[in-house]
Image (cartoon, rainbow, N blue to C red; front, side, top):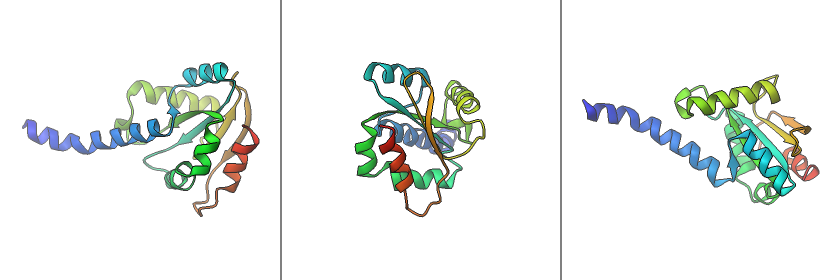
Length: 150
């Protein structure tokens, strides 16, 4: 019986671990207060990324087409990166993290647009935003947003 349970849990654990690794490898923070605090200390803006990691095809493509590029890695050094995931599979995040993300969704992404990049200053004031992605590999507007607000 316990082996059956383990076999059932392996896909969930592997998916959750992959999500955590993806976030950590890219310097992304998952807590708003921590991001704002770091932004104040480092005198940087915060780049907030709203994603639906398990259900949003444009979000998945944006990861490959933008976030995995050298251009993004260079520009991202000018920001504190805040990753807000709102997955449909509730097992991907802890209940506390999911509640935190949904709270930020209502405050910073009222239209619930995915993907959404939003630039905040260290006080949490919105400076700029860019929503959506056409999945055509063209990320010039995303890079311009980062270049303009660094």
